[in-house]
Length: 629
Image (tube, rainbow, N blue to C red; front, side, top):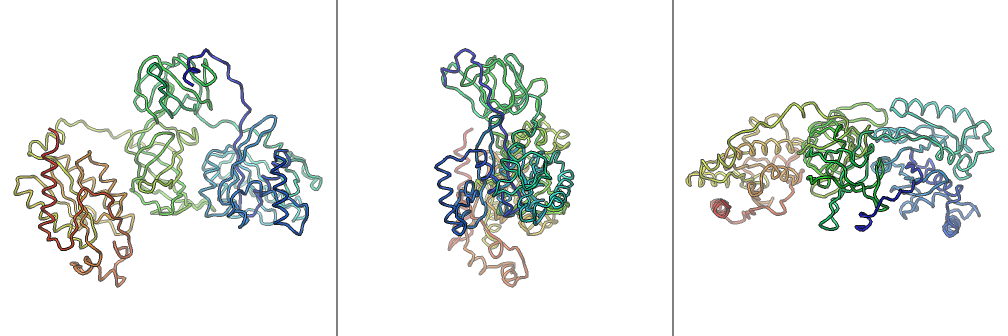
């Protein structure tokens, strides 16, 4: 590879045009059968696979010798074969003389909507199946909405099982008209309709003799000829996937171009750093190119050294991508646990990952009727229109313009599971109106004037664990040592700053966020801040930690067994919770997620509060003495 990079230019061979499409629709509409028949009619099923298909079909259809069950060509999972449904997204690759195809056979059941969205996210066209007997169902509307949301603007409507309605044209016309209206309302530009009988191959690979009234192309002909224009930016954009350094003499920046064209000598800017350079070489495995355009995987070298890392975007210097850290977005929630506003997630866009939180759910969408509904959270498979805030500005484009720079996923920071896919709509104006104001005095200077190292001591544990008692003793001891402190107690804050919050999961997330931001300001003022809040969720404690520089945040887990907390019950809250008078009470009907690796783990047990407080003070003094400078 390294030697090829230094070879002279070799013209790249032009590949066939590639079309990615999906098959979708309601369960049992015949998606897998249609796709299997399409492959069969196109002569793309190898002899050994055809023999296996005949053998497996005999087992399933013992009463119909010679009948082939074409769904077996795509339903690859044993669970799917046993249930007769598609669960996962099954990808198939085939080609004709004109085009190459990647097709995603998507599941029809509502609980697998997230799988269908995965297939639609890279598709340029959708083949939407409708059972002629049933017409448009809720899942048909759901899948059409998600296709439109994910940028699919071309649909082939295949009205299947026409043999079961006696090949009636009036039924086909009625379904086509109704679907056309739905598609137009959702912004889908083009719909091609055709009647099919998937098992028999009518209008799949060849035109049907049973429906002479239909004069259009068959499915295979449509796929081969349908126009699917590019919907990416005309301005040059390339997210950097890899900084390529095979040896000390070569440094290249590799990725796939996701918009526009660039030539050797063209001026670029590396975002977000905004450093400029000119393209010196465009390197590929087949040799250098004079220019490169959308869809090509290349490695660039520049005429001078600039700071470029994985996740940065190389763009046209004259028309760089916009930058922002606050957006209006559409979200399709894919997590089993609900989306909670103000919880921090990882946002991955291209090769770049940043921290993100949904600051507001403007509304959620009933995907069956497209009605906008008020919402405080999003559950599995729900779609919402939200505001989102990032901890770093990113180079972006609206999803409608560029899927790569406008599409993202959210990742749970604890489980590393993908919990949402999202589409950037536009940057919020407030992001460009607010700037950081430089201040001459910083945190270190304020701390030195007080003779101390600013810290945040974050006491977490169940209600009644003794957090406030221990923190109060710690503050008294620090005050006696001449330290400047402030204690933020969760109960006290709920009389003022957090007076408007309840105790739902959403409210608990916002409660911790506000307390953490206040603690951050007080640490910036040079103080040692003691925070006493239950903070039951690991994610919110991690959000708090991320606000501080390494070493400033000290998580103190006051580990007191639930039975002991209930025995103490100083405020009578456990008794009320057990009686059903208090809902969402931590430890009873709302979970407490124990810290995995706190800086201080205080085992209350038989220890006195004074002993536990002394452990905290000792930790602070030792770490302060060991700190550099």
